[in-house]
Length: 111
Image (cartoon, one colour):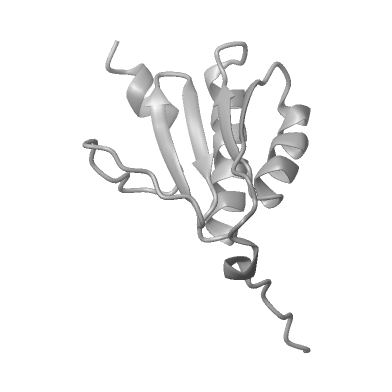
């Protein structure tokens, strides 16, 4: 098995950061959101148009993609999540998530 070279992002520090806010209306739209994340954009997803099960599926896929690029997942609100590539630093007084992929059903039971 050959080794895949990692891209050195530090060379491209002059790149502009971009935040993309996207409302997901179908699970199939996750691919586009993952491609945005892969191109090192901060992706904020609003999932209020989906059932809890479908929203969980989207969060799981995005969290996996975020983990693959050493990024972080942030739970912004009940149905809004932010996926951040590793070259972006987020400063917050909120505690760091304990899991790479939040469980929406746990949150749903709190209401």
